[in-house]
Length: 315
Ligand SMILES: [Zn+2]
Image (cartoon, rainbow, N blue to C red; front, side, top):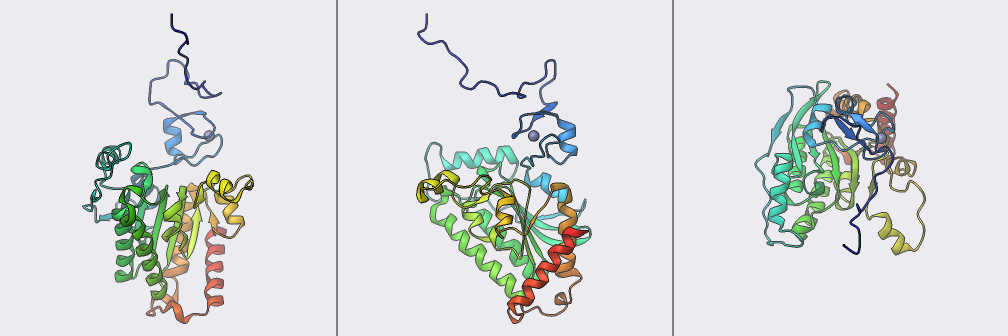
């Protein structure tokens, strides 16, 4: 007779019970309210919970289907593959984690880049995938974001990034941190050339990515209730020894504090991006000039941006 009866570690949460006699895979559980949602309904609703409106994480490929006009996406730099320079090993070997990420996503790293059209307007895109090693930014993610921006400069088209990331990839140490400087430098290049950069934040967008290119967009859009921040809540509370307000680090909270321009429903995102591309670039006289961002006064630029944001949201 064992001394302790083996009990399940966690009791099931209300609403988390799968309906009986339902085949596996027919339903999906909302990660937030634990409602069981018919998978087809969840997919048709772009992975947004119809009950609590939670915007669940989506893969880079799914995101492309949601945002880009069918048949217009041309992937580039898909051959770039991470190298385990430090032979890093913690609980698991880094090389093994890369392998697992590949199996899960069918990609060589946590990002897909290329060019595509949104409502007929071409943009250079870099879209992150949280499923691959927590969407962490190592040398490949940094390089592909950089190349997406370089391509935008060369072809004079706007850039859109969609982030889903826990930050820099620790297993690549300094090589990963260097990507913060590299991507930020390219944001400055885009700014000098007057080419718009729109940063879309999805859940979660944190740490080294948020402390570099993701926060440097001309316009920053976030999905509702997504986590946006640098360090985690617990770490900050322990450091500053203060309780942080409710909803701290959500999209809505950071918008209220001026860090995000638009909080946008997933269903509206494509239309908002198309209108922004139009206002900021395709219908703008700036496109025809050689666009020297620095020559414009700061106040003029910020009022133009406010106008574009207002028009993109209003329609
Ligand atoms: Zn829900």
